[in-house]
Amino acid sequence: MKKKGGRKILGFMVKEEKEENRGSIEFQVFSFTNKIRRLASHLELHKKDFSSERGLRRLLGKRRRLLAYLAKKNRVRYKKLIGQLNIREQ
Image (tube, rainbow, N blue to C red; front, top):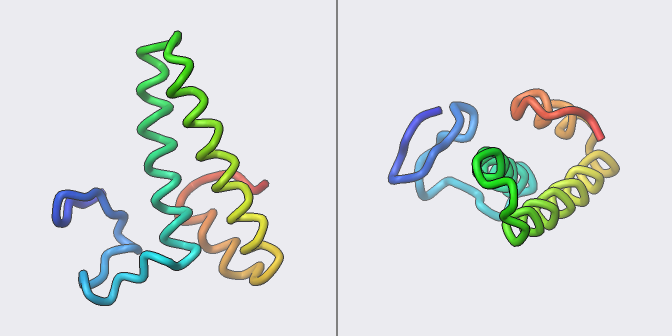
């Protein structure tokens, strides 16, 4: 991962700041995945942090719904995205 402007960005998501489409499904799933990974590592240290666990579950649900929508609309983009993010197929 590379640092750009204070945020972690994967190589395939690196674009000019003006051209970055934050509303795209790919960017939203990428953002949720980063938050999920950060929360998961937090919960490994703090096993009894139930409010963070609830937040993790909410993010997982949002990401799952976005991925289901993308899989239904465009299977090729879906396969490419889950391959790049290294997450398993739903």
